[in-house]
Length: 104
Image (tube, rainbow, N blue to C red; front, side):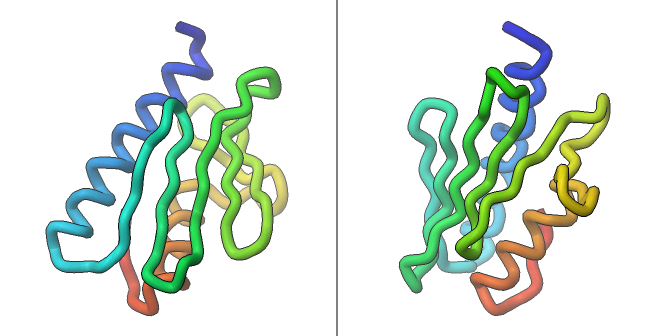
């Protein structure tokens, strides 16, 4: 397994655990994983889709009608446009869809 694959897998497993905790707390949405693709679906029908792009060693997120590309900097996934960390981006994207502030 490459470093990229290990970092992506660890990130997705951690995110799945945090999403499970949000659902267990009563927040209404669903998520599923098919292979390496994680799809988060909201009651409105909107989705956030997270996929690995192994050839480019990037994590891609489709959210709010836009694509976002993240590069691993040795400790964090960083959005190539604007430099926002994934740990800040995802809570904002989830909060926007859910209409409440959440942390993941």
